[in-house]
Length: 65
Image (cartoon, rainbow, N blue to C red; front, side):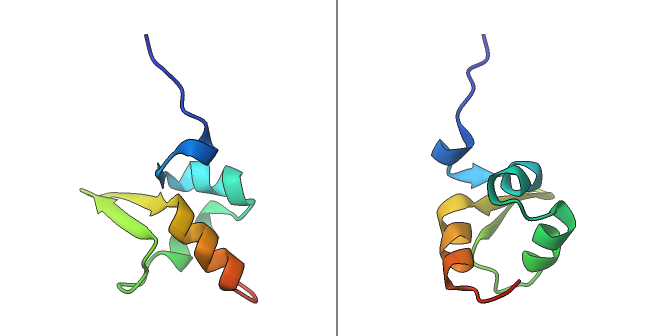
């Protein structure tokens, strides 16, 4: 039995989930999270995961993306 967790309750989001959550395209999210100093990305092996709250903070402070 698989339980679903709402995106707004998850700590980490996949690129696909982050795209649904923010309305930003996957390619743009990938580009934004490519930098070594990006504080809202965490790597699980080769899988990129985005820290939801840090991503929200980044977007709240951004003028443009």
